[in-house]
Image 1 (spheres, rainbow over the protein chains, first blue to last red):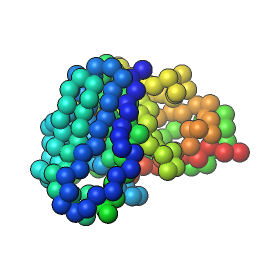
Image 2 (cartoon, chains in turn blue, yellow; image 1 turned 90 degrees about the vertical axis):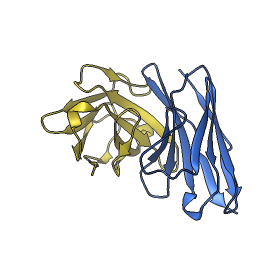
Image 3 (cartoon, each protein chain N blue to C red; image 1 turned 90 degrees about the horizontal axis):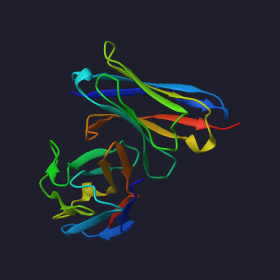
Length: 107
Length: 115
């Protein structure tokens, strides 16, 4: 089974900061990595799919990069509404695995 | 507007069964893969099952394989999850999701497995 290691698990940043969250796969997953945002008490929301494709309606301050085993979600300028927990998800070869999550708070 | 409404959750004893439903609207249900994902209280997300558009292909992680069965009724735009031999570790909010990737999610239904 493919394991996903997400880091950091907790992140504190200020409004306007550039924020990066990382996910590392235990084996090559090509480009099949998505990012989700989950606000408190809500269902997750898709932000980025297939490494770097922005989902409909998602602000352009969110971007994704990477390939193979190492992937990054970047928020170019943190906004107050970005406070949430972020999860990566790999979907390769008929299995899906989430990362452990990164809780993002405002400093 | 895409809408997914899960139902069927509740309190169930260990070893018993429960069937979840997800009513879909706002998109052509039969054209999309569907999935179930769960989240234990204050924990992360765990993929539970995926089903192809026709229902001919299903996928499960080892944690639920042989106990859970995902199915769909395209005529009713509905997704189901039959859960048998439930364990305390199956306690979670269960979400249905549409598409590959999981582009949209319902609000979830809580399943509590406890004696």
